[in-house]
Image (cartoon, rainbow, N blue to C red; front, side):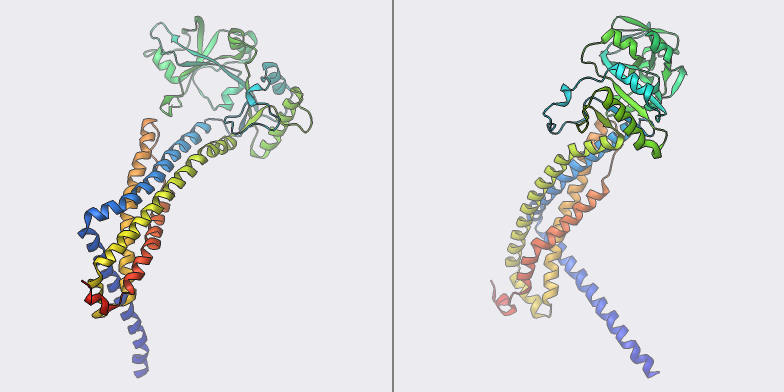
Length: 432
């Protein structure tokens, strides 16, 4: 029995020490809050710098996250395992090595696209596409604003773009071969032109030319504040006859049979087009092969500068705020010298004094950080609301912001806390 009792003493002593530590931490926390609330104006001005620093980075990251979600959603409208070949890249960051700017390249012609479609063996489908113009569309019921796009396509584009027919039929090879004056309408355009009836079989006019509606697409909804269904599709040959000029360059949309054949399909189509365009062996392509991943990579490169700029501005602001916190804490130590002396005289340890002042600095930073995060998320989501996109919450950056605030509080509160903990009790009690 004595052995059992004696074995229990160490555990009891350990629990006692832990309990005393929790009490001391809680008391230090309460005293830190009391010090902050007793100097409201000074505390408010101090945490303002932290607030601005955190707000500046969170608002930028939230806005960019909203744009990134939109970009991913837009790119997902392509069919599975699909890539696009264009004359120029989506974004141009630097001059090419050969000194020839992308827009100076020779156009990809309709004939080259047909040859690729005829000779390529691996793709499931190949579509040719070119946007020709924007203008006003008229029906016997309504007239649109002059912002409706007209796009020439071949039938393979429907699969590549993941477009589904709701009514009527898609464009067919015979429409392209005969350059017929037929069209397929986007869903929102059809609803505007024919609010109370089906558009299939009706006639519309665009740029003074009449087209017969043969089909209606399923809705894709709103993107970036606009209607992505506000367009009409015509046979590409009809568009080339109507709008052809020497600089028209078509896009080639290719759908691979599956992920296992995707790379081989890219290589085959790329090799065919290089040969048709007479690219020298070893020379760079004079066209761009773009997939969802490559476009997202280019988007991230564009936004990297914004992220870096926001991080630099925020870092400067946080360092300035940290210096301000250190200055205020040093003033607070001086003002409370006698209080520190009394506490040391009645048994407060150096660690307890140091903990109190570090807690005070961390609380100041976190108050500013939490406010900055909340305002930053709200401000960034204003962009989402304006563009009619889902609200986003960048939890990773919100967490980073609060962790950085805690770090700033510890780093810049450490010296004032050390100074307070090492005040001589006798000198402190005599301090006036």
